[in-house]
Amino acid sequence: MKLDSVIDVPSLKLLKVDVEGMESEVIRGAKKLIARHRPVLYVENDRAEKSKELIELIKSLDYRLFWHLPQLFNPNNYAGDKEDIYPGLLSGNMLCFHKSAGVNLEGFREIEDSSIHPLTGAGA
Image (tube, rainbow, N blue to C red; front, side, top):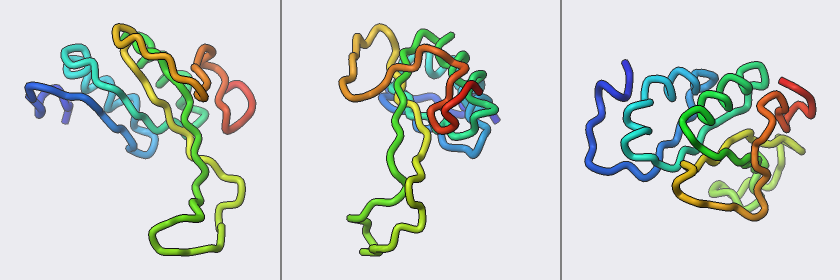
């Protein structure tokens, strides 16, 4: 079911998409909602083989994209666990702003080449 057909809200500031490799499908199904409200998009992008399509799709909606790559382990986690069972692993996400927002982020790398995925270090 498309978000465009089930959500009708007067305002939308943030859309978070984390659907285990189906991110492009969600974005395509929310194009009208995104065009109308121009929300900040926070989108998981951890599958290098699907990355290029996802990046190009969001860019086609007139968005600027930035990599957000937090570590999977947080030593200050809620459970108080001290053992890092994910040493060196990062979560691949994108923080996306409509170009009209005029946002420039310091400390985040802007995505300019859709064929490069930072978790693989090579072209997607």
